[in-house]
Image 1: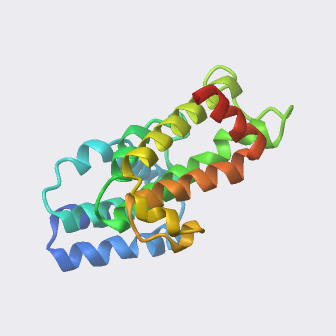
Image 2: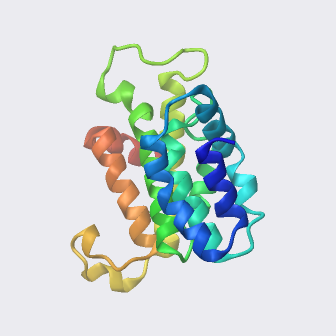
Image 3: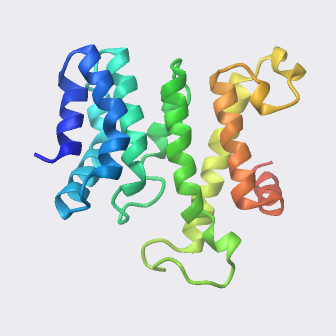
Length: 202
């Protein structure tokens, strides 16, 4: 059994302290282990099965450990999957009361913004297979994400947030996590593209 797969077995099955330690060692394992095909296959399998695995977990602390560890390996996921294949789940995680889980979801969605916005940032350069992931498909995913984030923003808004000028100063909350993501979208997409999304969604 590979080191990464073994660590996830500990996260999912061992006691609270061992699970916590294993989750926080994932980064070290990823960057120190030899990059062999078995390791990549383990990561792909873990990411592909993560949604189903998460909902089997009963303990809140184990959910936290699992999602935090997943966010470390997520960038090595199977590239054959479309960037939004776990977005419905990530949008659920953004609403979680646990800030570590929300921040992990933010990280994983931001990880996909680079590939999704390549055609915006580098117009005319071919980056994706037109068959599997065209600029048109990327636009559809970005619009869907934008609409979902704005719906969440509206549902979590409270009058007390009016007094905060900057996102960083907002109290930890689902509202802040969603604002962070919309800010990242503006950074990757650019103001002009985001304004276009606003017009489409209005």
